[in-house]
Amino acid sequence: MGKVLEIKNITKYFGNFKALDDLSLSLNEAEILGYLGPNGSGKTTTIKIILDLIRATSGTIEIFRKSSKNTNLTHQYIGYVPSEPTFWPNLSVKETLHFLASLHQNYDLSYQNELIKSFDLDLNKKVRELSRGNRQKIAIISALSTRAKLLILDEPSTGLDPLMENIFRDQIIKAKNNGQSIFFSSHILEEVDALCDHVAILKKGKLIEYGSLEKLKHLRASKIEASFSSDNELPKFNNISGITNLRYDKNKLSLNITQNENLVLEQILKHKPIRVYCSPTSLEDVFLSYYQKD
Ligand SMILES: Nc1ncnc2c1ncn2[C@@H]1O[C@H](COP(=O)(O)OP(=O)(O)O)[C@@H](O)[C@H]1O
Ligand SMILES: [Mg+2]
Image 1 (cartoon, rainbow, N blue to C red):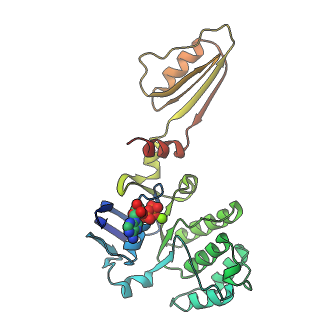
Image 2: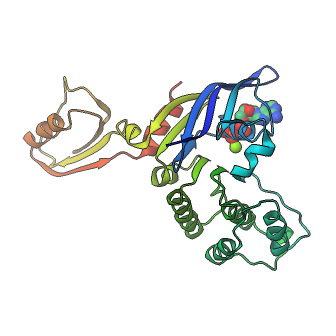
Image 3: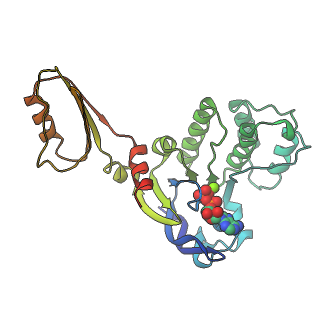
């Protein structure tokens, strides 16, 4: 598999403020990378450097093995959805799409028309009349219609309602199956969980986790909840490692566990529970725990 994007040791200062700290990551052909991080962690800064809209303080980026600074070469490979799409307020949606189409050599008009229908976009409205979500649709439709080998999407589902979010996801999967690579930033964990092969988690400009989604899923815990009849003694879990958030509440208990689930369950069963629930903690729990610990 060929490398589509290779970011090497990027550091970015804004004055004395270090927005990105020695960032390295890469993206292969037909791969989706979810770029996660809370607000202000440096996602948009990274994307602007990839696009050469701003320059890094140090480090290099290659897009299809060419320096990202050669925008005349690299941009023919890129479809881009900015984090805050702004268009000409007095143009209609139709005129806007027509203009955006003229910027790309391989723009696929029939695919564009299919997308306009799927996203239910009204072509006759003026851009100034559009809601945030409908402006977002223009940006998504024009980026997808380039059929670019590399799609760079900065929080692309901002403003989309759940129905449109699903349509967006379907199209991203289609793009991947079509051999395109997708780099998208998000703070919506569920979306990343649903779409990505690889995940990079950024915190205050530093990459704190990077790998396949599968690998990160191992960080997930199981949640176990059990209830007992009121005269039963509740189990204790001394000497069992991997337990967090252990709570006792009257005749119920709940805990999170990353290992030794069988020992915990054995202990619970000895105390004759009325009910036991086991469920995976969400990816969200994993990320929240990252963001909260300092
Ligand atoms: N042009 C700029 N000048 C100074 N600071 C900036 C500039 N652009 C971004 N920053 C700062 O860099 C950090 C990362 O911002 P950004 O990349 O937009 O984060 P994200 O997209 O993850 O929300 C923030 O603290 C932001 O205030
Ligand atoms: Mg941003």
